[in-house]
Length: 295
Image (cartoon, rainbow, N blue to C red; front, side, top):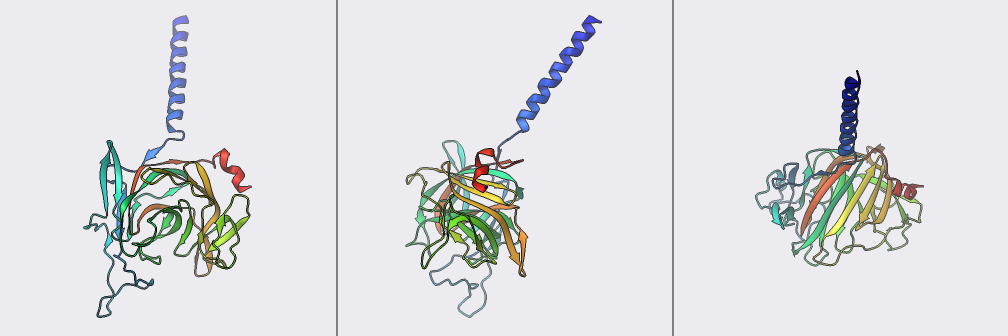
């Protein structure tokens, strides 16, 4: 009987250890989204936009509409995987407007990635800042925005000196802790300000400047974090919160609808840019260190 008791106790201890280990492995587990084959992403490309572009569908000289390049037809190699110090890195040439987008939708998550600028720029950004972006809660078809390149979504701006700005894409909207604009001033994010509605269905444009510039020096990687939980999100640059947002939504036929999940898009926007270390984990609650931003 004593030996049987010892065996049962040992089995119970093993079971407890396995349960603890399995719980640890599944709790807050980071999942990589980038591999050498881009197996978790698809591509959409629209146009090589010109300086004269005004938001209308591009046309040929005879006035007929030009079709976008479309889905998964990257013959120009706008998106390619390269190796850097043994790591897979996504190179975005920027030559054609478009995006890579995840095959999977995500909801309630913490996203991390690193971004660094290349050297090239293309028309129509030759005399402008290098530009890209992380678009989240992306739904529907591509090409519904001004540039005919992206899905309806919310944007975490990736731009020289403007890491963490916010843009609405198509008919999306959000409330941002920000200063009210006056005259020619932009809306500017501030954690000390009340939430200000921006975008579709509001009286203000869908743009807000980040609270401060925390981008890494030229040539170095900048770490980007995006936290989304329920209708809330946080834009974080090199560990610093630069924007607090809530009430993510879109407006359709005059009706406001929640926008709290969707695919992720990485933009090609006339500038060469590199992305790496793209990983994500699910959240069961907003991390405690950030809850005060929404009080």
